[in-house]
Amino acid sequence: PYELSLSIHDAASAGAYADCSAYETLPSSLNDFGGVARPYGAPLDAAGRLALYGAQFYMSPRAADTMQLTLAAASVVAVWTRNEAYTRVTARLGATTDGGAPIDARFVATRRAEQTAIFYVPRGGAYALSLAYDRLLTASCQSLQLQLLVRPFAELNAALVCAAARHV
Image (cartoon, rainbow, N blue to C red; front, side, top):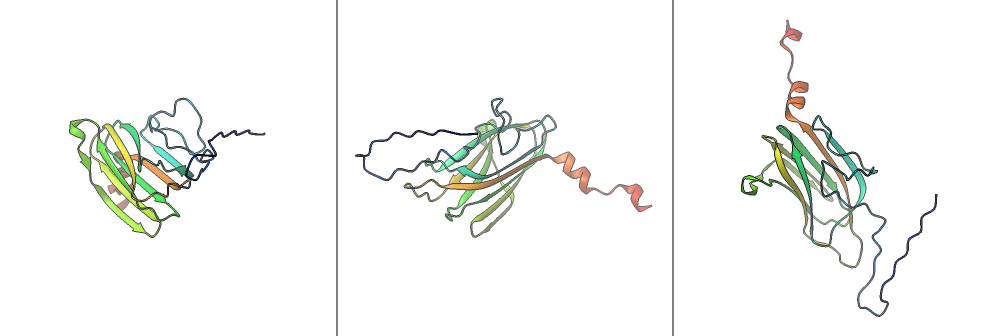
C-alpha cells in the first residue's frame, strides 16, 4: 500500500513549517468515532467500557484538547499521558450539564514526562475530558502518548469485593 501526501505552503512566509499529518488526532467524542475504524481503539461500548491507546497523538497548538463522553452509570476514568518534550499535561473532567461542575481526580501522579489521573464519576451523564498543555513548542509537531480507560464502577467493585462464600 502506498500513500501520497501533498503539502503546499508559502515559502516566503515567516516561521518554520512542520508537517504534523502523520500524527493521530484525538477524537472529539469518545462515544462515537463517526463510524470510522481507528488504530487506537474503539469508542465506548454498550457496557460502558473504553480502552484507548495511541503512541502519537497530535497536541493542539490551542494548548488544550477536549473529548466529550456520555456515561450511562457511575464510572472510573483513568488517563495516562507521556510527552517527551516535558510539557505538563493536565487532565480535567467536568460535567457538561449542572453548570459544568468539575470532578476532582481521586489520584494524580506525575513522574518526569508521565502523568496519571484517575477520576470517580458518581453518576451517568454528559462529560468533557480536557487535556491542557502548559508549554508547546510552536515550531514543531508535539505529540503525546495517551492511554484512556473507562470502566463502570459496579464492574470494578464486583471484581474487588470478596464473596462471603469464599471465606466459609
